[in-house]
Every structure is written in structure tokens, then in C-alpha cells.
Length: 87
Image (cartoon, rainbow, N blue to C red):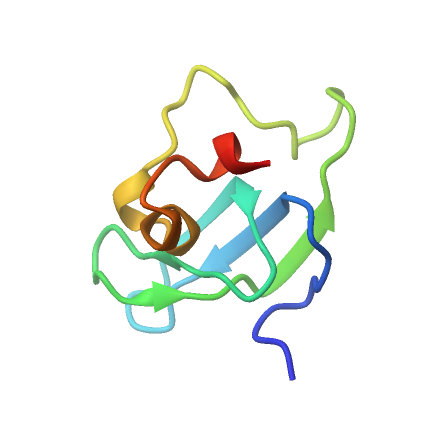
């Protein structure tokens, strides 16, 4: 049983909500069965919604100007490097 709605190999767009503080966030660096830490609570949170990355016209386009918080990303920590460089 997967920990996330999406079970593919590609990077996707994820929506997260911390069960402890209710903080929500979105990420264009979301992966199957991988979570991201809540910036406030420092607990690993799995996305409640994941969708394929769309072409740059929707809300789910990742903004390249916003740095990806690698220290909060389970995939980056597992790889030991920036998760987007791996694929």
C-alpha cells in the first residue's frame, strides 16, 4: 500500500497539510511515497493530493525563483542531493 495518492516514477505536484499545526503548502517537487517536513512542527507530512505537473498555465507550475527546501524534503535527504537533479 502506497503512502501517497500518486504511485508513478515522475516528479509531480503535491498538496500538503500538517496534522499537528494545520499548516498547508504546495510543492512542485512531490514524489510517490515521499513526504516533506512541516517547517513549523518538523514532522514528516505525506501529500493528501498529488497531480501530474502541468504546462505553465496553472497554479501547479513550480516557480524556479523559489528555492526548494532540500532540508525538509524526504527525497533530497534520501538521495543526499537536490531531488530534481536525479531525474
